[in-house]
Length: 148
Image (cartoon, rainbow, N blue to C red):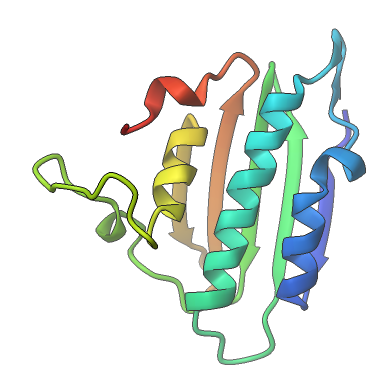
């Protein structure tokens, strides 16, 4: 399947579009359609990531975000590039010894992202862009990774 790529300068529009991902990305494999739950997890991760960019990221110029999705060997592969200043992603995950509220009012977005994905990375590229990558295997069960 060909990659699905969209670029945005309006982060509100980006959030709206990734919420409708199941309608705009025909995620098909050689063996048929990708499970709707995996597409939903992909949409959820993208929504959380772009919402965090919208709320917290510093942009010194007009925001720019590019989302690329593809299917490779029964897994969704996603890349999000943006022109924000970035942040230290791992500093925002709780440590093993940290106590968490059962359902805190805010701050669950990165935990949702971590739970829904198999692999994730966040780096700054040589050209100064931020690059967030994640994969979700076709047989991924995010409930197996939940904290509750």
